[in-house]
Image (tube, rainbow, N blue to C red; front, side, top):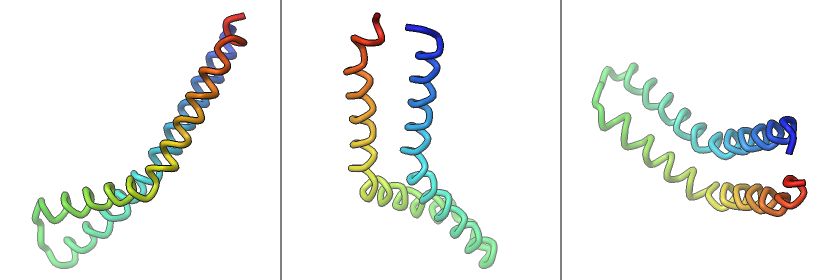
Length: 89
């Protein structure tokens, strides 16, 4: 196994991690921004008002994208495990 192979596997893993996290973080970011704008407009600064909608948004994103995220992770892991014999040479 060469250094280039290790770097390629690491790069693929980082790209996968980024693409898997993006939907969940996007939902949390969008809801957080909406709640912040609402709080600025109404001058209500309640901690639960920011926390609970974000948790619900992240849970919804996991429910919507969870199967896709798991499929991507299993595919990557399967491909990596199947390539072990060629990597060892």
